[in-house]
Image (spheres, rainbow, N blue to C red):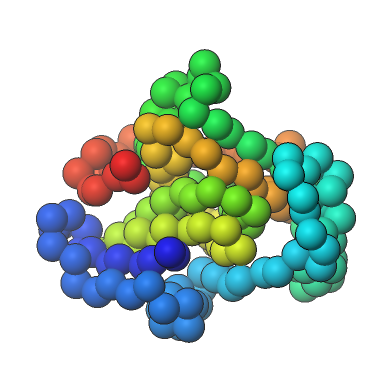
Length: 180
């Protein structure tokens, strides 16, 4: 179940707000300039769909975002618990960083935890199947895929280089709850 938990950035042990209701999550995030919405496939994906099948099922929604924001490329990423690089990837993404472009992710299956450091608050967004999140360019954040990752996501980019991070050097992420 998707969830949003908000913390004061100085109090990672005490949530100040929490909800699992999509409309409440969307309202809180939109107020901070973060896009959160739910998408539905326009066809059955079947078992073990190819990247082309996944893109095809959500092309209608991707086209809408491209028309609104001028995004240039998209792809599909899947990560499973048997990936030999899972620990190194998790550690990399757990470091607070920013991007020069929006970080747009849509979860086709599985889950991931986006943690956004906005002002003096941390917004932990548990994204699951059918959730789209767009973290605005320049927003400090980190991502936790869990110790046993199991997700497929569509990534949407406004620059052809794809994912380019600028790490902040902050240790803030180490103090906040992680995905199991």
